[in-house]
View (cartoon, rainbow, N blue to C red):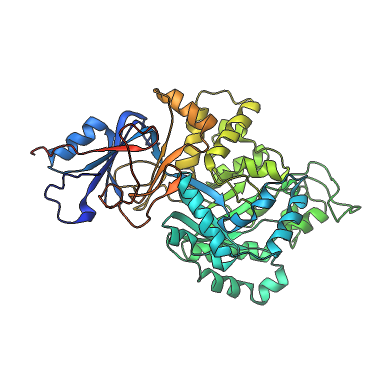
Length: 486
């Protein structure tokens, strides 16, 4: 039974919960041994060594409830690319494919069978919370799934996906239609547009969609460099459906050719990459992040850096579809901003970003990245990197790091290591399934692989978190320090 020294507290929202652990990882400050995070009213009040945090509370006569966790406390994970509505399409993601077109056939067959998109999205949100995820870049294709982040109490952005618009149809009314659709996307926690990909939209919509978003102060997110056709062509190669076309060749000044689409650019024989193509149309920028980034040259990656555009890497999805691994070693060496995404269960085995972190570690090592900072940088990519990609690392509702005033989104991982380097190695190389608690806006939302009551504040007597034991290896113990005089 939890007890609490309530002191002079008059309102439940003023209560303080101290989450402590052997290791606390703020991300924007050095890791803390025997650390703690004090939470009040859904925000972080203090971060530091446990003894200091307790002293700070005692100095002002503040009673609190403590939850001491085994392992490490991190910021809540940020899944920087997902489609929660496809959670019911796991049969597609459990297969293996010979490339994007092969996978797309299976995806389309399953999609056309019909799904309860709202239900499936909600299930995906629940699985994400259990995995330690507190914010998501969720791409919405069907409006029934638009409310999932708000309904689940998660952070992030719901991106309305726009695809399959040709120039004539767009000019005949596409802009008005998309504006009407965008108006139906909840602005809580955030809204944006996702122009699907350079090959699924003609030039006119790709030119105007960024303007629509930027006029409203929203965000952009698109698939880029996911399909091999998007990569730069140093010489003409056969294009599916366009065999025999005689082209101009690589190096011509393609942007003056008035091409109507990226596929037309390819049909004319231009070898420019999709990254260069969308940049010429004004799509990239610091208010935009892209997903996958597999088929990108050094020049493409430099262009992303110049525009302040982060890339969400989804290595397990790439592997299922049969694509090449992302050049994570190059991204790291070059200092490119990266984040981590699971993609959906239609192309990935789970919604646990830590499994993708492990895959990225393996790929980076295979690509020759040998620096000692690999563990730390990949953990940062799964937290602060995702927040940065969506513009959520700063501002009054900032996430992705543990700092005073930030939203109290925490993820607790069961690790045995006693030192920071060993803990980082354990998390990065074998972190999937290790989340033992998830706190969103100060509320305990999951513990020991199960959801808790979503509507109660963690640390109060009615938290609905189930029994805990002082000897538990995965749960938490609660203590009630005596209030000290100021």
